[in-house]
Length: 460
Ligand SMILES: Cc1cc2nc3c(=O)[nH]c(=O)nc-3n(C[C@H](O)[C@H](O)[C@H](O)COP(=O)(O)OP(=O)(O)OC[C@H]3O[C@@H](n4cnc5c(N)ncnc54)[C@H](O)[C@@H]3O)c2cc1C
Image (cartoon, rainbow, N blue to C red; front, side):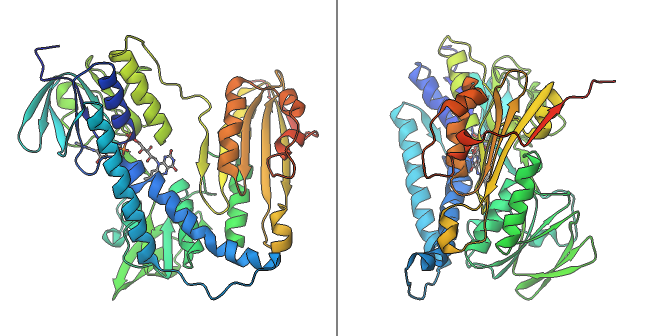
């Protein structure tokens, strides 16, 4: 590899790129990373981490309200958006510095530039410099997509800008039904804004279990978020500092902020990938094999730019698998089976494995266990909320193939349930596990009665 300036050039210093670079360096490779914005990528700078900090902020209102039923009398509470954003920014800057230091400590050279391909072994930096590399890893992530153009779309913000608004908008219209849309609906509403969620599909959170989707929508509406489905934003007009939002239904909404959370597209544009022979799929994502190798033998791609499972821990795993495969002498395919996922909405969602619909489609027999109840905490507080816990079981093998929770602590539950589901635990294993009382999660090991059982109809 000595004909090259480096053994590995990583384009993109996000979750996947940072992990791949560090691990490749630990395997002895000479590594460079180019990052055009901020080291840490979407997750650290304008994704998971700042989002979760805003979610925490948004939950205090309910806690303050609930405290009354438990005997607390609280003083008049106020919320200051600029304080939250400044504190969040300080923490993100700290994390960015920590990520950069980790890379440098591992011997990785970090270049703060945009990089594109010049040929299959050469990277061209925005500074004009060219670097020759034995291997190139494209880890450029994704960016918000606004969907089909509509009049006034330039007035809409994406999640990127939502993290830097100068003030909390009193009235917010969010278009989208995915996890980012419902999370920001919860954030803005929890902090005191009036929120309308507009989604063109029949119900929010497409891809999640149907009971979860219904339950979340019901609880979001109870908590004051207006959810309009089978409808979309048709036009946005600016009048002074406010906006008038015209819907496809003909209705008009007033808003101080219009946010589009209508999906993300892989960052492959103007990278000259196709010029060097890297095949791009029709969704704009880089096509890769199980080892994240592209159609060009020495070019690999990981993370959101490949549009497989667009989550940080998955990008990290793919980065590690790449480093082990190429520099560690241990070919490792990234494992995308039973990846747990959470939606930090109000209430929270946690899930792993198959939805009921997927199981009924794939398995010969599917058993469903379901519990819905008012959590203990809501008794004294009087909060109008219910939790949902659901297990999807393969009726032929008794294996638990799916676990879905809506309610406080759902994400934490899903992480642990994922261990059991990944190990192939059966419903009998869940039943044999002694409950931890009093918790919400105990219901996962105490549900004895099937709520439904389905046999797959024979294919015609
Ligand atoms: C609002 C939001 C909330 C999210 N919440 C969660 C969550 O709770 N949990 C979860 O698991 N995931 C979450 N995600 C998804 C998660 O952030 C991504 O899956 C993850 O960051 C993907 O990592 P990556 O390495 O593929 O790309 P990224 O982290 O996006 O990193 C790509 C990097 O490449 C840089 N780059 C792009 N092009 C170039 C170029 N030509 N030259 C140099 N640099 C370039 C970009 O600036 C970026 O820093 C969230 C995403 C968003 C937007």
